[in-house]
Length: 358
Length: 92
Image (cartoon, rainbow over all chains, first blue to last red; front, side, top):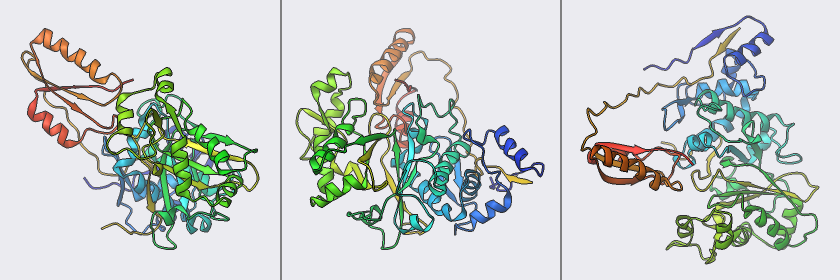
């Protein structure tokens, strides 16, 4: 069947009426959208080298496809500037990897939201925020790229709340959940560097985030104290699973950790070894399962997995750690994975370049 | 003002249901469990009803490693070759 890229809705030449029209069509996330006028969509498309009909992602159950064109329409509606578009495209290329399982992580009662972490020079080039109020409002790029992600899930993939999105409670990140990794004063290699992209190539990492947990520690002044607080948050009985984790260290906390000579791997090892609950504790709250314990302590068990305990994740590499936020404040955060385990594994893709495509 | 439609502009996939069995009597049953807590137990309870009422036989239990992802096509192809009908479900 030929693609119909030209489904046009003719509406009165009245901007407010057009906004209302978008509401009436069920195209919004509850907030007003920019009406996707054709000229704005063309401007967005100019930032993607592939033709409008090129398919970026496919829903595994329904077969619904995200084309470059549909992505551009939703990006306009979210309020994106054209230069943001490559980030959105890369994010859905990453989400289309089977391991991410964007259907499950969106449809599930678990209520996760795709967290986008943009790493590298492109974040600065488009004015993303990696600093003060990192997860809060105020930055157009962060806000609208994250919002466009949600609009695509809703409008293209028809993940409609109450119908195909059965989140029990959802989370605020389902409006928008997009940040930049802070490069300024970051003592560790950037994520895009650890992901082995060529120098100068930026990346976006996607993670099905189940919420947001602030980790406050203004009194600790050693890596063990700071990361001990983080590990305790990761291992709380409501959150602990075999799933992956994202930890964004505040600059204050990062300085304490890095000034003591700790590398990212050192910190990952520490968090993995400390973020754990005993079998007795897991049993007491009704969350212990033999199958999960055996998976962590079987033949492929990581050496830091302690007998008699359930750790968060399967290996230290399941914990993504980087820096973000303003200079002042002992507030880091832990973002748990979706629901009970490893139904979604974080993925990444380069922005605006084709490295591993055919 | 002309607005583009933001819904899927990709090719549609046409899905159809398999033909219903003429009778359940004496048929072979497969169970597709998704790894969730108590899934195997609950699905066996359901299958046992067909055993008792229709003389069915439970032939095989298939597993998914990810409850929320579609079953691998190999699993479905194997089930289609081995059993007359499949019982599955999703819940908590």
